Image 1 (cartoon, rainbow, N blue to C red):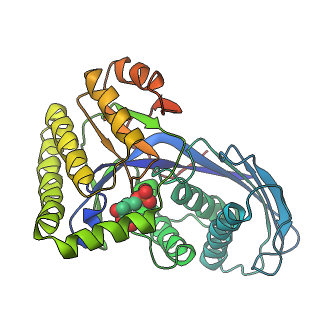
Image 2 (cartoon, rainbow, N blue to C red):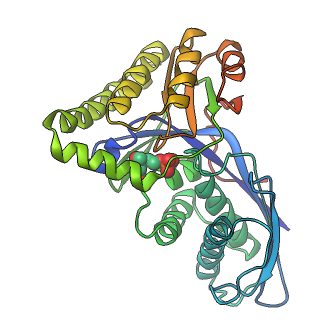
Image 3 (cartoon, protein in one colour):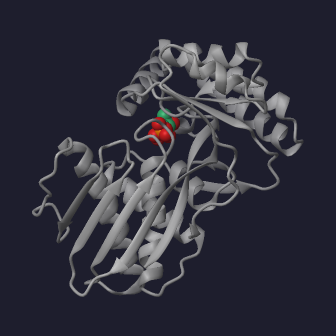
Length: 328
Ligand code: PMV
């Protein structure tokens, strides 16, 4: 059996503006998806999923859309999950030149699903790495990142950016600007605290909303550019180990995202709870509308304050994870 894991991520700066060519800085966090893989004698896949904030499921099938599983969880979620697993297996088969390889797979994840923390990217990255190694092929992390991006791109109908998959495969803080992705070496320790409202926004709708505002109002286009300016300042602050400045810039970034209409009452409540507990900064992470916020706090105060905030379903520490995909 071969086991790999890969981290989820938060956006330190730059979501939404990244869609219009501005840079963004996602950061890997200490919450992982783990995929265990064992080769079978036939060409079938058996997939067991646990802790995916679904109830979990077990399916055996031959891959492809004709042979869909009969399980007791909402079909679109299973369809999406299976699309990612199919894609990961396909990439490993291609890398190892073993088109008929079948596998038993177990997927485990402690990353809330669909909440802006890159859960699907982590599953795809870990899945490609584990299945390829089970077939005797060691892929470089940037190759895993590229293959995982192709899977997300296909499953999400061309809507995926490289941010989640690159960050999950490489680990640490990364900078993404269009197709240009690189690690930010020597980023300081970032004491992340995540607050999760138990929900999720509709990414497509939120991105469309920002696009309309940007087309209608020059000042909305200026706001998007200003987020890009924050990201560039933030990169400088990271290079200078100035975590307090990083926090101030996160607060500014949240304000601009809010002006673009992508925050929500529960996200704002969590952001303010963290700030009132003296977090260095707090902002929503990902598409918005619901889901997660990220705060910077070395002390237990923000996590405690979040856990008492109405509308916050889960609060947890998840520091910057410098390791990307790895063998377990
Ligand atoms: O919620 P997530 O982690 O899928 O992030 C969405 C980020 C956006 O910038 C809003 C969209 C994108 O594709 O970059």
